[in-house]
Image (cartoon, rainbow, N blue to C red; front, side, top):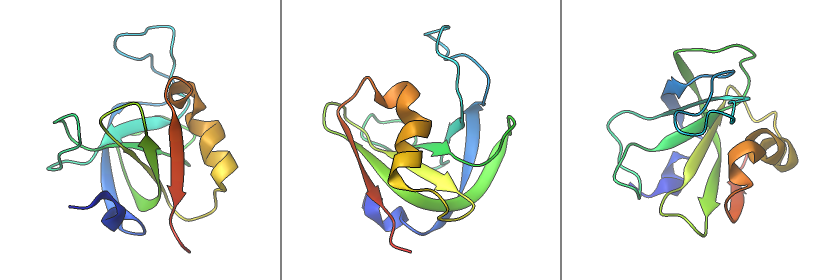
Length: 114
């Protein structure tokens, strides 16, 4: 599936890196948002397609929401989805929320049209 086909679609994200928990390999990196994947998908790295979840202020096990943006990484083999309940986030707010990992990559964002 073309990744841009996910824009404005409802998806369920299975959270494997909950808000407030450390990265599995980089223990000093604490997730400020819930982060997970879409089951039965395949990303550029051969694993399931990853997604940042914006909105919940606590750790969750799964999250249903709308894909409001795609994060393209020029220096990596995969893209990331940004999922929220609605389109209430600006590009700057998204970048601020995901900076904790995206600071290590050359990233750009494509926002969904409202």
